[in-house]
Image 1 (tube, rainbow, N blue to C red):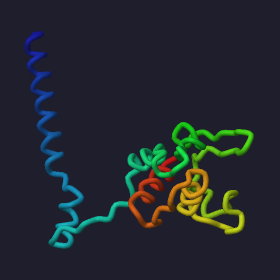
Image 2: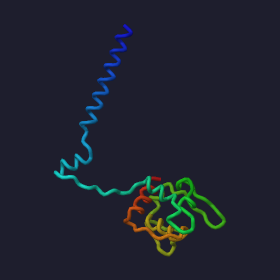
Image 3: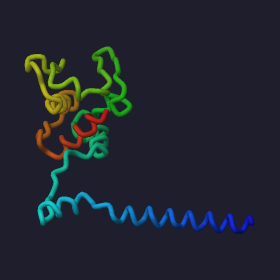
Image 4: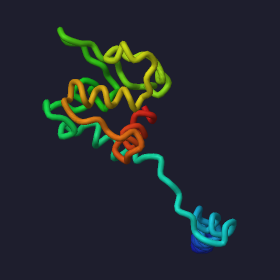
Length: 147
């Protein structure tokens, strides 16, 4: 009796695995769906790579002062910091604050998040501004927008 139960359990498990594999194979990929609609593959523009954005966030090589974004916004931007010279905020929800005013650019009025990134790069980090439509900026913004 016990052997029959074990055999039935194995048969059910194999059948479930077979059904799952068959269902997975039948699901169309995004590329197949685009091809089906257009009759030829279409290249999709990527918004940004948040994982690479985090790497850039931690990269002191973007500037000349030895600072990275994380120098002023620790723990991947999840924390702010206070020193005798400055106070920074955590970056959680930063995408909802901009366009808006930014303390480092008070004369510019409302600025975009990309302009904030560039203000930090060219100010405290001593680096060069990134092209707002460039890959590095898109990747950093993808990371920040995920916070």
